[in-house]
Length: 268
View 1: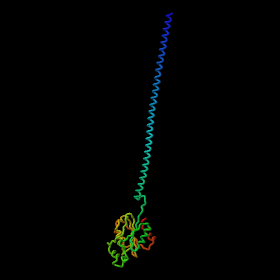
View 2: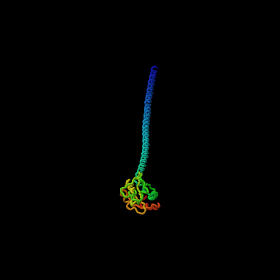
View 3: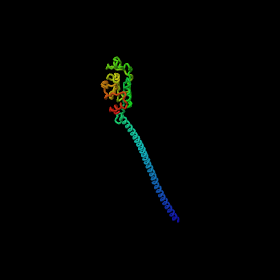
View 4: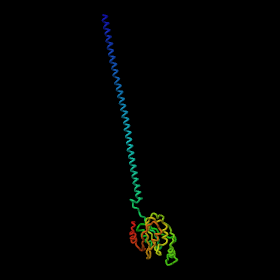
């Protein structure tokens, strides 16, 4: 009986030990299976973090590209505005150059009517020309005015007689024209004394440079024509274009005077 009990106890203990071993084995397997799950979770987290970093880098790159594109577009707009301003400036410069060259802009012809008139006869004709052309008017005034005695042509000792007998006489003029270079056309008027222009007109013609100008002489007289007066005055100048002169009457109307002026072909 005791042997039987001892055997049973031994068998129970063996079974108990076997059961504990199986339980321990199961427990070890369970522990080893939980670690791969945690490692997988860690790997997924790392994968997510890496993707997040990549997305962030891509986002930053795209942001930088967008900013670069915006700056490039702004630079293009600025460059286009600058080009437009340069083009406008070039157009203005071109227009200015064309105006100076006269290629596309009509240049105004500036006219001066200069005259000497001892008895105011030539003065009236000069005023008609100046008014008809809206030109400037200049009177040649002697520093020493002529008196009635000076104008006595029948007196061989009168001032006018002495001057006209001396081709080198040059009576002084009071005042001068400061801007003669601005005029393109000059009308020069005078009375006829002894078949010539008064010597004071010679003084005037020698006082300025008429190069490139057009000169139109006209005179008044009691009946004689211009004779050689205009040709003699022309010899005192150089580089000017002289047109044929005309004798006019102090009593001529402006319409009559302008009929002659308009027939000169000056295109004024």
